[in-house]
Amino acid sequence: MAGGLHWPRSMTEASTHPRPLSGLERLAFAGLVAQLVFTVFIVPASPFGRIAEPIYLAAVSSSVLTVALMVMRLRARRDVRVEQLLLALFLGAMPVIYTLTAVRHGETGDVLAIEASAILVFGALAVLGFVRSPWFLAAGIAGHGLVWDGSHHAAHLVVPGWYAIFCLVVDVMLAAWVVTQIRAYSTSHALRPAAT
Image (tube, rainbow, N blue to C red; front, side):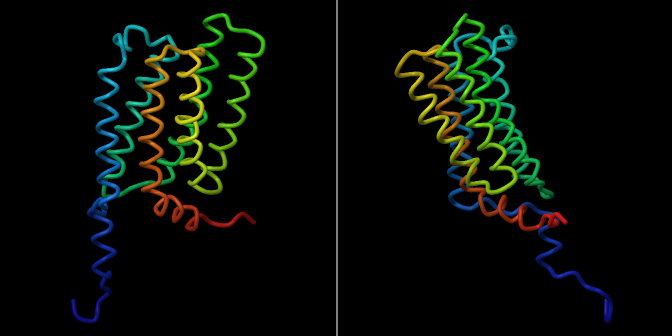
């Protein structure tokens, strides 16, 4: 159209086609798929029959989150703030699962206090990851897996061994995914209007 308004080619492509996955994103995406397959094999019973138990609810929820993140990344119109919110909620909820499981098994005193304190630590990282920097999400999710899940598995605390391993794998794969999304998530922070 001569003399008319033309959108730059890159803007129209960005609005109708998703940005292709980078090499690291493809690797992390494959990790998410592997995590889903791993979940099917490690969860010892159908989680749907035991959904009232926190650990089985977590198994289903983490799988739903993983699929949702994968689908959202592949969409042409992507809302990275929703992705960050889901990841922050996931990070904040992880220690709640441990605490609820401890309560269900009659734990009291120091064990329950330690489990409950994790809600504050990981909850703070979740909030910081949503409002400040996605690096807090990556660090919090990885830290939960490597430190919290790993120590619970080694000491046979609160949750069954299969759950600690399951949670560790989920956390590491999701943290790796978050690292590949740091640029997109950081850009979403820069685009938000400043508070007045």
